[in-house]
Image (tube, rainbow, N blue to C red):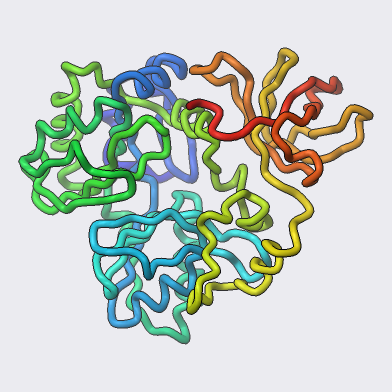
Length: 362
């Protein structure tokens, strides 16, 4: 198992360590509900150093990133970030990722931990006829996500550069906690506000200690993977490997908003994905709330009132903020409308649920 630079720090703070995406990571510290509410109400720090960082550079950098990304990177300026995905050539998604635009000759792609090697190989394959320079910096790069409504206020203490007024999906390269050239961005996946910081491994412990000290007066706590999942699910955000994968199209997953059919944006498999958009799909990703008592989990069948299979759960949990069991899953399009009654099959019982609009937590 791989470890991040913070493994011993997590263990000393009481982190319960588990295997995740090939890494030894903390699943929780104090408890899921406490950690979840800490992020919703104040601020918490996540170790997300397992995420992948891939640089694409050179005169052909724009051409490669535009080719592999479903979104349109031509609209990006320096300081902007974009959420997008790699469509594969079979109708599914290689991964979802972030694009940081430094210039038309320099981009940072931030990818999921479990897909680093797959994504790098995919980029190399697509690059054969283009000729950009690709570098995988994942092993040398650490990342912390400081999330919550008080996160930027606390982190402002560690830099002279104004960061509290940064808008969503932007970044700055700043001096932070005495370290130069730290990349700080505002792309959080919790819906609670905050920032992410990227830096070399060797300054990791220095930065972690500074972050905890700066956040102490605001009630900062370390947060594990379990609360990270409940927070993103309350927002209805897709998790790769659950809600999207190599077999799910961006249109099925409700990611049409990051799939741009603009002139000149000839991304991989555009023709087939555009056909799906105009002609429709055979399943759609929905959000639902359970009305009967129970918790939906990945792969549980979704059925209609007569017990006929109409889909499958992809994510589910008990929402700490809403005190309701919520989930996401794919169903036939005729069952995807908000307000539709569906049933989740749990251990042989069909529990009533209702389709709701995402995000669950507003």
